[in-house]
Length: 236
Figure: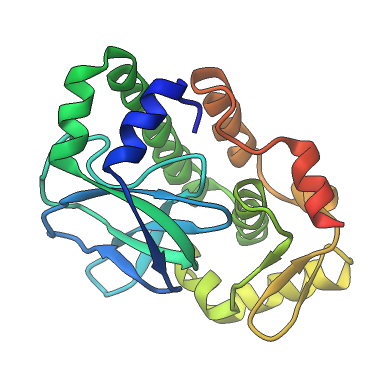
């Protein structure tokens, strides 16, 4: 995180590290949120809003650039969405009461989380606009490049069923889109994972929503994303 060393130390003293598998639910709609989680490495967590027909549509994706739980609400309030681990790995966790106490002790820490809340809200706003206006191919490419931006590898543990669920569309649509992207040499699907072969080409197929969100993050919280150079090296 783009934190001052003293603030980082304050947080780490109150945190514990946990291991979470794919599909681990950090909280469901209506749950009282008691912790904030910070993904480490390639761990990714998706926010999904459940519709009345049982489908879930992803509204935000959070990796090592961000945090989940009690960040916007600043307290133990009921969750509106489901937070589910999409890519397994480690997360650091802190009790929200402890986090709120630290915020009262450090003005810079309080401002940092306020700025992050703005960035997370921007991502949700952009996701709503994207789902309403862009094609399934653009959205699928956006999701994959967002995952690439937040991880240390171009191999993404993802099935077409998972991607269709996150995009809120039928598997047949996703299968056709992935087939086109694979035919064009942008990626390969192998046993429940997607291997990004041409990150630059995939970004050209994506809509500009991911880039807009990243630009906002870079302006408000410079340094939270891995550098583009790091991602390109990881993709080789």
